[in-house]
Each structure stands twice: as C-alpha cells, then as structure tokens.
Length: 488
Image (cartoon, rainbow, N blue to C red; front, side, top):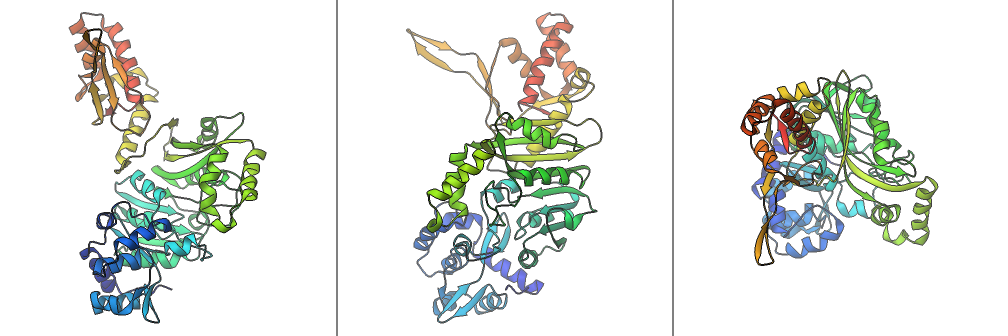
C-alpha cells in the first residue's frame, strides 16, 4: 500500500528525483537507449548501473525493481529523503535490503508510481497497473494541448493521461474499473502537485453518466483475444465491440466542439473492408470523425505478437496458438488493424474520414490533428468551390520541393520538380509538378485568397480565368486533402 505524503513532502520527493536527473532524458543517456520499462531491458539496466552512485541506486531500485543493500542506499541517499520514501511506502525494509514497492517512471515532466514491471510481466498481481509503454507515449503525443474546461481520461490506470491533461484543463476526471487505480491516481496527483483532478471508479461511462466534456482521451484495453483475463489489455466483449461502444457512447459525452481521442484495434472481416467497418461505427454519432490506421497484421502474425504479451512463457504452446487462430477463423477475421480515432461533436452535416499509412511522429502532433480537421472542414463545406476560393492557404512546413538528375547515355537527365512531405498524418505520395502547377504552388503564402491567386496566375499565363480557376481548384483540393496545404 502506498501512503499519501503531505503536499510539501511530495514536492520535496519530486524535486529530489529531478535534481538527480532522474528524467526521461537522464535515463536514456545513462542506459544507452530507450528506457521504456520492460523486463527484457532489466539485465542491461542492471549492468549499466552497477557502480553504487546515487543515480544508479535510484535507477536500479525504482526502474528495475531491484532490492538494494540497506548500507549502500544509506551511504548515498540523504537520510531525510530515505525517510520520505519509507513513509510513502515506496520502499520497505527486508532483512538487510530495501525492497521497492512501486516503479517510479519519469514521463514528459511527470513522475509516476506504478506496479513494478517484473511483477506485472510475471503475472504476480491480480489487477496490475501498467507503467509507460508505447501506446502511452503515442496517445500523449496525439492528444490536443489547448485550454479545456473539462477533460476525461477513461481507463486511466495510474493516471498518466489525466495528469498530462490537467496542465491545460480547469478540471479533469479520471475513471477506471480497476479497484487499485484509485490509490495510484491519488498518489501520483499528490506527487506531481496536481489538484484539479477527480477520480471516479466504474466501467466505461457509468461513473460520468450525466456529464459532458470538452476532451475525452482513452487508451482502453483493446487487445482482440479469445480471453479476457488481463484487465489492463483485454475486455470481455466480442472482437472489437468494446472499441465500438467506446466510440458511440463517448460521442454522447462530448460538449459541442468537444474532442474524443483514443487508440484502439479493430478487425477486418471477410466481405467488409476495414474502412466500411469503421464508417459504420462513426456514422450518425453527431460528430466529425477521423480514423488513422497505423499498422495491420493477419491473424497468424497478430497471434505471434500478442500471445507472448498475454500468456506466460511456461504456458505458451501449440494448443494456445491454435485456439487463437480458431477464434479468428470462426469469426471470419482476415486482418487486425491498429490506429487512432478522433471525434469532434459538431451540429450540422458531419463528415467521416479514414486514412492509412500514418507514421507516428516522435514529437507532439495534436496541432497537426487540428490542421487536418480544418482542412477536411473546408473540403466538406456545403458551399463547395466558393468556400475554397474565399480561403487562404500556406504550404505545410514539412513540404519539400526536389529535383533529381541522373547521368545516362553521356548526358545528365533532369526529372520534373517533385513535391513531397517530410512527415504528415496522412500518406501522401510525391507529386510531380508541371511548370505551370509549380508556379501556382509557389504562391501559397497564407496572405491571399485562392481566388486572388487564380486571378494572378490567369494574368501571368494569358488564359481565361474560368479555365484556370477549375484547374487551380482541382490542384488545391488534392494538395489540401493530402496535407501539403494548411488553412490559415
């Protein structure tokens, strides 16, 4: 059990770890690479922290979950800090050692207590709470970072996304069905000095049945498996029904203009494309909807990836593997997809957009999500061409123009100019630009309307404005849809 420290004691603990460079960057530097806590990384961590320095003692204890010799710990950890760690229940005396009772993981300026990775992966806990993992990071980078009056983190676990949202929200609600979440959320809120967070226990939207939010985020238990034993990863509903319910029920808990952002998996069944499946989920929600697919696996590959995460090595066998494949085959599943879904509640005629080929950026991309919504709003505007002509556009900062030359048959051959994106939320194949189109594309500066740019180009090429206008509208729509252009 963790004990809630007094606010001043919590602040001192947090400042102490920060002073020791026990941060994302500090751990990456010390551990020569990624520090995301997995049991398979523990041997490397222990090998690189053998010298009993203060930082190494902290890393071995609170990242690897390794008990430390009491004398060695007392030799480097200040007595006052050691007392705080013991009083908080983060350490417990055991013979001649001090045994860590929780992992402490830094995450984008936060310090988060969770269950030790060794206990989680060894299945020693009935209701484990996970630490930092790839989906945690992806959802954090994906989430909008703007002022919100109210936010909800559904399935909060130890409170990671809720605490991150608290920095830009007046009030945050965190919910979870796991009975152990309350203790960790309260502890982490205190440890990080967060006071605008409310925790409610319960499943899905039951704890907030009559409330609406400006932002809802969720990293739910979305794995698609024939079992439902691991609460943090699996759910008892058939295939991707849990994710569908979260989408449809979540839409009803958004304020006008509010956003829901989630990571999930969904299936593709025989006779139905994955786009058709998601469009059926997203239609008639009263929301504009964006689904970005990141990767796909067939049932065999999916089982190879997920089964080791679900079942201990001693229990994995051919029968287990076959049970999973039979489960998918009996339900006509041909592929399992992963991706990001965004809803925005908006009155009027809503749009649904599905894209694939997303390469997840390594930096926050919430602003890029808003830019994509602004572009799709314009593309879907009932005013059609008139709305486009009245709008102003600028090129994406990730847009690049290149020309290639190659030597053949005794001379250099030059290719047409090519427009491509260094990074983006939608897959955008490079576009070869003819000279007239190149001249047009270079004019997007965010200051003039498209109609003004058309008139200027028509005068330059001595062509009828009507003809130039139609071609410019076609090119603009293509550039806007593929993310080359941004609405200003």
